[in-house]
Amino acid sequence: MAQDCPSKEVNLTHCNCTYEPCPRKGKCCECIQYHLRMDELPACCFSDDVERTFDRSFARFVRENG
Image (cartoon, rainbow, N blue to C red; front, top):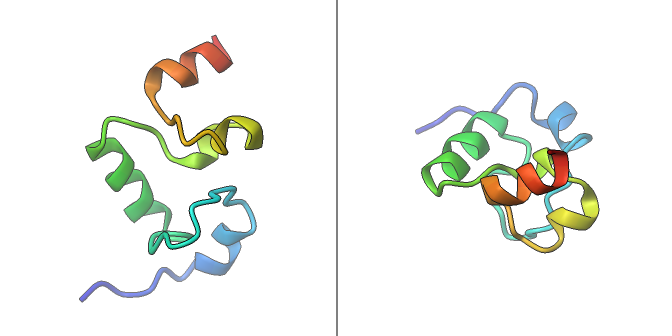
């Protein structure tokens, strides 16, 4: 069983994920691994407006930051 992240509370202050049932909120290592497996980036890589679209693709990241 995985340990709780010692930085979870600090991480949550920077987390802009709006997916409420997410079990990875504040656990950045788990979040990044999950999203990379899904061929996408986590919410924190996007502005709040883009994050709300749930389009976390690499293509969207490039469009927003290119």
